[in-house]
Length: 146
Ligand SMILES: Cc1cc2nc3c(=O)[nH]c(=O)nc-3n(C[C@H](O)[C@H](O)[C@H](O)COP(=O)(O)O)c2cc1C
Picture (spheres, helix red, strand yellow):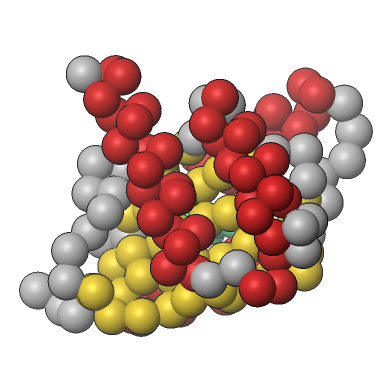
């Protein structure tokens, strides 16, 4: 098995238009991830709200880098800020080609929480801390679904 890496980033949502259009764009992002990520052995999680995306991608370094190249070019978001990119030993999101938690109460709360802890400025936010928050939301959702 190739060495496992994890990338954590934040970006600003640039999808404009009504709620139905926004929902359709998010669905199309998830469909791309569900189609493209499994053959590349990529797993991860995506959180979205009106203002921002937060994503964790985990898998082999070459797969993360080629996929992130595409993601960076995507006009549906901007001002990408990579908070962490590091080697790790275990996947946190092995059940998900791309888990989506934007609609969970905690997913929506995440940004309220981040705003509170960062004073509405995510500059000081640590990638590993953001990863832990997203992982906790995923665990809670998994427990709820079980
Ligand atoms: C926030 C965000 C997250 C995304 N995550 C992924 C992803 O995990 N995997 C992926 O293949 N595409 C992802 N995309 C979509 C890519 O930018 C791109 O549109 C897609 O990979 C193109 O797929 P295609 O080459 O099959 O046409 C994401 C886009 C955004 C805006």
